[in-house]
Length: 327
Ligand SMILES: NC(=O)c1ccc[n+]([C@@H]2O[C@H](COP(=O)([O-])OP(=O)(O)OC[C@H]3O[C@@H](n4cnc5c(N)ncnc54)[C@H](OP(=O)(O)O)[C@@H]3O)[C@@H](O)[C@H]2O)c1
Image 1 (cartoon, helix red, strand yellow):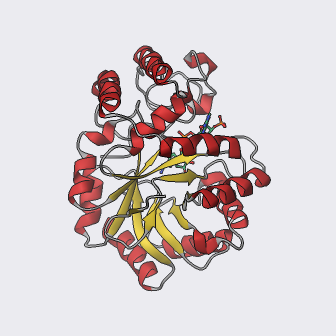
Image 2: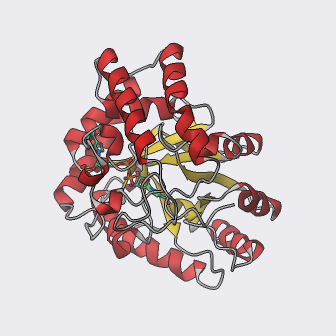
């Protein structure tokens, strides 16, 4: 499989990575058997997928643990990305060591700040991360969900930022307007997350009412959905209209909507890798077909046009969860 270089580092990863948020099981995603995790990780490595994305915050550390178990004996074949929840500079070192223990490894390939937090001085957070890199505990520094001014400030510290992990899918295109060009300009790779908007882009839901509360909390949905906390009116009508259009295009291409959605994200210049939450080998097999599928320029343009009104309506705010943390 073609590998892509992350930023200015020497780390090369596959254009699709495995999103490990559900691993270890928990309230958000429900149960997740370790046998499925291990099978997915091994089948992914066998197929040439080498990047695995987790975080200390996923299922209170159980995602990192589950990935560590699955990678036993094959750690050297994998590139691990994990995230520290808070950029608190006084905690970063101990948090990193705890992640290393859970992952059963002595180095993390890409260590990212999960969400920006303006309460902490970014130069001190970056200095701590740089020290981890110098000490060999991590190979590269990354950030996640950093907006225009937050990324500019982080780059301004002089730290080498290899990636910014950001939400990107047909229904959540905010990064295209300003942030993606900035990342390209500074050679910061983009790891795109939620290419399926947590299953919504598979087309399995016909209405917002059918979507489980944890997956209908995004700014696309009304704020009175059970887990929503963004204070916005949502764009539910436009969302389902757009989904219908995507379904029609997928039907005309004779491919599942999920494949169309993933392949569109991977084709975007500036995207280094798309992270797909993959719960079992059947999902993996289907998602691998998105790598083999080369969409025509015409198809890309059709999808761009179809989803543009939603992009215009939702704007440049790239925090699709709360709308409040990035700028
Ligand atoms: N940095 C951040 O703040 C951040 C935020 C969110 C996510 N992430 C990362 O990005 C990764 C991906 O995002 P995500 O997992 O939230 O959402 P996603 O990739 O958009 O959706 C994943 C879900 O879609 C379903 N799915 C996957 N492949 C499928 C297929 N072929 N057919 C039908 N359904 C399929 C699965 O759910 P079911 O099997 O349950 O239906 C799966 O859990 C995460 O795992 C995490 O590593 C990072």
